[in-house]
Image (cartoon, rainbow, N blue to C red; front, side):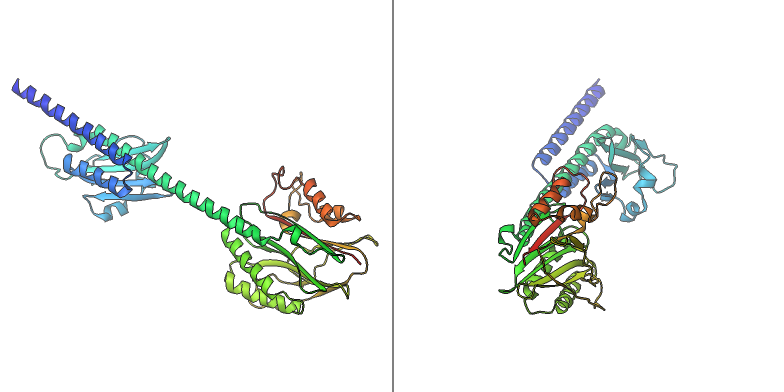
Length: 412
């Protein structure tokens, strides 16, 4: 009778211990302890309070990693492959003592699932394998399983919370980068406009930040320069390279610099900045109001569409060289020269427009530009018709790249 009362008292004490342990762990989670602190609490409960000798935990985040190795040598964890040794176990598995393999140092495999996906694998074993009575692993198995599930899910939630904070910080950085980049794209109201020239532009990045750039500026009382450029690749690195390129263009492009020299200097600076990992295609031109001469270089960029209103002729200038940053030194640079003798319109664009697929999946090319530029309407209206016809920026789910357009109109 006394023995029964003693066993009942022990069971009650054990139940209280387990309940208090779960409450303690819950409080620890609510106190926002770190992953390391939670694992320390978990390890203490199992090893010191339940006499569990060996604990090995693998957890999945972006890949499987060993997050706890207690009571056994680190080399044991390194020899076990989750993919080949553990993934097949979907329920608690006893490891036979007679089995001699990578898992034979342990007694139990406890898989932890979250939303029907394996989140962690807990391997546990005894420290005193020769002790009498029931193994502490088997004796407290369900409690260990419950505790493991709580701890692993809590650690995963910590990871997800940190990831959400990182994503939010990245989002804010991208928003700031987007605002800064938009400052590089000139406002249409600030672009050169007088009796000799009219300029306008359109810019739509595919993501928050893009790799396109265009500009137009008075270089002197009688000279205006304009350009459009596109960097290879996407993302922050592409945007930063283009921001650096814009600063160099603004600093180097003057009324008297030879375009060949301008392109050479720009190439040197892109090489220095990009280290050969990216390149920039560029169309750059300069027009003189007195001589009516337009000189240009096309550095591997899409050829602009030029329309002569009186003669109703179309021309796509391709004269130039390789892109900026493609080669350490550009071997040949060819400058084109056009004399503007009648009302002329030019539309420059990036490949986000020309490579836009139509309803049949074919690239629209320059056909859409040629269609809407071939009239006496102002070039800003032509651009509006182009983007409206392609439902840009809203309504076209086939867009895959930044789209930039600059229109220049010369009056003679």
